[in-house]
Length: 321
Ligand SMILES: Nc1nc2c(ncn2[C@@H]2O[C@H](COP(=O)(O)OP(=O)(O)O)[C@@H](O)[C@H]2O)c(=O)[nH]1
Ligand SMILES: [Mg+2]
Image (cartoon, rainbow, N blue to C red; front, side, top):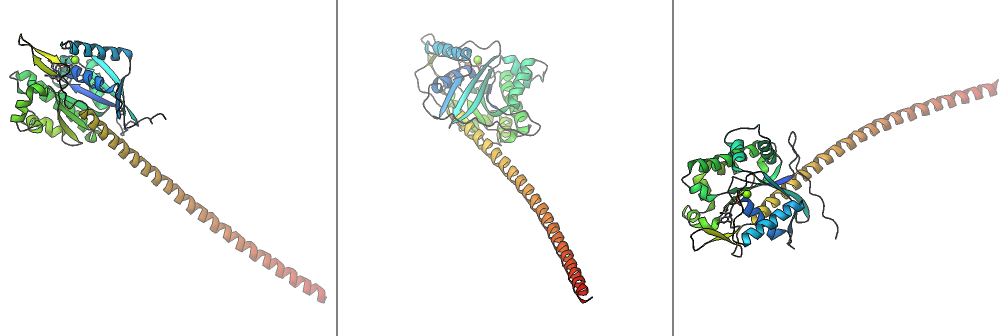
């Protein structure tokens, strides 16, 4: 089987190269569970979408999360930044995916405190600037909770991230997937609001407005269902049905391919126009050369004719004398 072609990153003038699919979300929004499930679905998938951890460490981390979840336990919440990188293959093209699991205070520092001095914050903002597509995980629990701080941090923070993306060069066309996580627990609230878009719009209208352009879709995701234990706590049920785990990624990748193909078609048409302009210039130059050549041929012909006439006249004159 021939090696699939390397996907071209998107280039925009004065902009960092956009070369990655980014997964972002506030702390406890469900990043670890989502990525662990996504990787479980895709790393041995025989479909047109495949995923492979870039390092053994990331692969082992994912296997560790599968084991925990299968054992009915939730992963610990993140205390240090965990960056997981994956290679993706979709429709025979290659992509990179970065999932940065930031501890809560980094997201807050970046988008609420405007503190850009922390290297972790710089990394987080850099990942937005380099995104070809972003999957934002949005926690419905935080949206309906009475914890005003958390609700506002998620709504304002995600809106800030989207505004940064949309205002950067090329950012208006970047596909966004807004993923409502934990849908198994919050489907009643989402339905009562009139569906997923109305639900987000009701709680975070600025976020929907900021994301609107560039192909934004909203998903109701169940990465893992919870069951209530006899003691009343919620534990994960690995084998229960899932929903909207692959779809946000698939749709983002389709959008990225569209953007890459559009940029490539534009590059080809600019190159063709340049080649045509050079050809035209060459033709004008050749035409000029041709015309000056014609001029010299005519001049020389006249000269030879004149010489022949002189020689003929001289010969006749000589013959008479
Ligand atoms: N019901 C339900 N709960 C989830 C799901 N995904 C995550 N959770 C809950 O959200 C918590 C935080 O998830 P986690 O992936 O660690 O969030 P992270 O901080 O963004 O990495 C988990 O401990 C679960 O309680 C899901 O698909 N369904
Ligand atoms: Mg985590």
